[in-house]
Amino acid sequence: MARRALKLASWTSMALAASGFYLYSNKYLDPNDFGAVRVGRAVATTAVISYDYLTSLRSVPYGSEEYLQLRSEVHLRSARRLCELCCANRGTFIKVGQHLGALDYLLPQEYTSTLKVLHSRAPQSSMQEIRQVIREDLGKEVLVLFVKQLFPEFEFMWLVDEAKKNLPLELDFLNEGRNAEKVAQMLKHFDFLKVPQIYWELSTKRVLLMEFVDGGQVNDRDYMERNKIDVNEVSRHLGKMYSEMMFVHGFVHCDPHPGNVLVRKRPDTGKAEIVLLDHGLYQLLTEEFRLDYCHLWQSLIWTDMRRVKKYCQRLGAGDLYPLLACMLTARSWNSVNRGISQAPVTATEDVEIRNNAAAYLPQISQLLAHVPRQMLLIFKTNDLLRGIEAALGTRASASSFLNMSRCCVRALAAHKKKTCSFFRRTQISFSEAFSLWQIDLHELILRVKGLRLARWLLALLCWRLPAPH
Image (cartoon, rainbow, N blue to C red; front, top):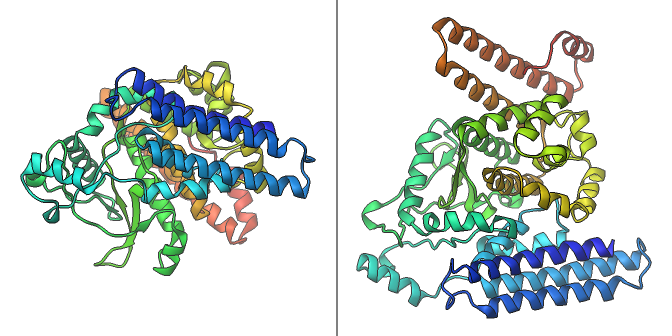
């Protein structure tokens, strides 16, 4: 177990170091801003963490009370060292730390609780630096403007190539403003979503002035309880919003860490509202990828293992298709085979996933080298969303899977209607309506089952009603 903990910590630290060295050596950042000193810090931190795990746990009997106590202390010390490294090196390191802080379902609690500080209290540029940019671009003082600084680099060692492509767009605040307006228009039918207004007359490529919207972080359950906001409703809204982005539109906000997703009560109605911030990084999915991804999730939700294999392999997984299915769902292979919508994640399964994370790193690296590059940002987005669900205690509910299935049905039907006759479009529309009705009925059955009512009716309907595809 000590070796697994050491391997996980070492890979995390090495990812930070390699990301920094890669960006430095390829001149994606100015050497004056990202120098060898930062790489040296990362290497030194990796060495210290590795030595701590090796020496602290080596002579203690595995599984003993003393072992568990010492392991927790080493986790905490290592997490603090990583947080200090991220704050000192900033940039890419901050982004990696934010991602790790959201992985409640995967990493030890000592790591996630320590690194969560980076979601809302990351190191900031000095006021002198901010004033200089505003003076140069707008000719105004900071006292009359609200400025949001975007950290442009991307996360994790295996996503550094994506950083090269995304860096110019993330540095362009006008692009961020356009993304914000696009997603606001795209999801305008969701009355629970708030995207802050952009003030274009006071924005440039280096300065973005947005409407100020207050709220609590989306993973702050205590804030929601104090403000009488239903956490299950927030989780459902978040799932609907991202399912619509991924499956229907193929235009996905890819940085939903808790500092970028707020929740509040609407001033006019008192209903729960999600506030989506930081629109610098979006993934535009190709139609082929989006449709294969729809088919794959449909197959996972309805436990069609033949099609799970088919569409995992179409997405580049090859013989590692079980691993891709497990990574996408954050479920064990046994749970995938039984049906991810049939039962929620258990504590035993959570422990299994955490314990096996380090053991499968070589296979994960192999898989990530073969899947389409679009999948990398999707993995990151899924991880962050799953971390929010874990913090709220709403992870892997059947309702969330059914909402995803609705979006998949709509997306696949819309694609089929594009190039066919009127008669065929009518057939597809009827089939779509029937599938959506089946999903609604399936959801109703689950609610009845949850209330432990009409068990005989449930058994009869499950026997008579086939699962929609």
